[in-house]
Length: 96
Image (cartoon, rainbow, N blue to C red; front, top):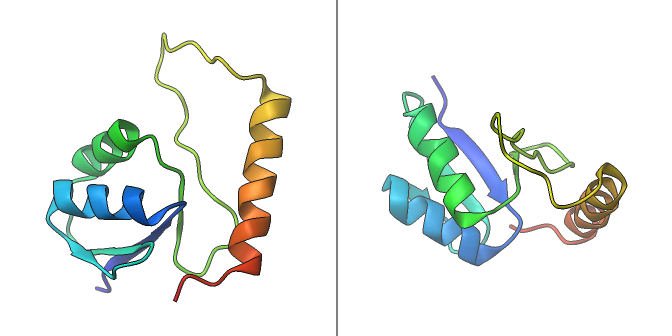
């Protein structure tokens, strides 16, 4: 099986998640997880950092759905506009 590769919205977020999960970090925005990884730990690390990410080869960021009981401070329109701006930046600037 191939390793899971994730692109983050910032080098700081990628570095922090890689540190927490003890996985490979490319020095920019990409981390590589082993094919067998702890998905709960991955979700927790991403939530702690407050990062957005996408899988290698995708062009749009993924956002974890809020857990039950979590309030959302932003409206759906604001959130979709923010995601569109980040997706455009990711398309314009290749991280590797």
